[in-house]
Every structure is written in C-alpha cells, then in structure tokens.
Image: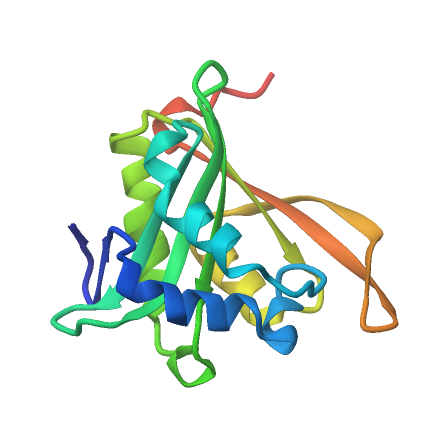
Length: 177
C-alpha cells in the first residue's frame, strides 16, 4: 500500500467490485468521463481483477486511511516503456466524497509512484472542458493544458470539448531552445 496524508492506494479486491460496478454503471457519473453504455458484470470483473496480467496498466483502489471500503480508483494505463509515458485517470465514486481533497492526495501519491516505481517521464490525461473542479485539481498538481479537442464527444445531446493535459517529470524536462 502507498500512503498519503488522508488516503491509501492499494489493490482492488473482489469485495470492491460491487461499488466499482455501481459507479461505472451510473449514467450521470459516467458522463464525467465518457458516454454511458450499460456494463456487463463479467467483463467488469475481468477488467478490474486481471490488471496484473497486463504490464501496460496499473489500477489502484483509493481508500481513506483506516477505512475498509473503496472510495475511488486510479488507472495508469497505456504505459509505454520505451517512451516512458502513460495515461492517468482518477475517479472518486460517491458525490459526497468529492471536494474533500481525496483526489488531490491520491493523485499526488500516484504521480510519485509513476516517477519512482515505473520510471515514467510523462503523464497524460484528458478532461472535459466543462469539468472545472477537475481542471483546477490537475493545474494544482502541475499538469499543463496542451490543447483542446473541440466537439470531440457527443453526450446527452451536446457536443463536448476535451482538454488534453500533460505533466512532465521535473528532473527530466529538456531545456527549451
């Protein structure tokens, strides 16, 4: 387990699957990340519990320290060992757990893990342009907006702009010029 100020990152357990499935199958919350599609329990179970069989992804359960239940997750995926890069994403599952600093603490731990344990140099993520709380968090963590994909997704009858962001490992940033 990896510990921050308020949360711990660790493995996803079978007991976590019911919450994960409920979060991922919630149409309103799914729209924070992607268009909603009904899920298949067996596919979700295999997806979450078999990450160790795929070196290109690492999943962490987020738990408040000293609490047994999962409050969210972090996905580090499309890990590219030659380019030393990956995509990263986070989700705090319950609305009442959001806005409490759990995501900031968990992301800081995950970023340090990416630098120290995966030896990565670049992390990328995407966020919907209208998701201001997430954009503010990513800016505070040092992510820089690299571009906007305009009208990239059609969800809920509306076109959504997607902001592309990246964070470079500070000790590996090449000088400009």
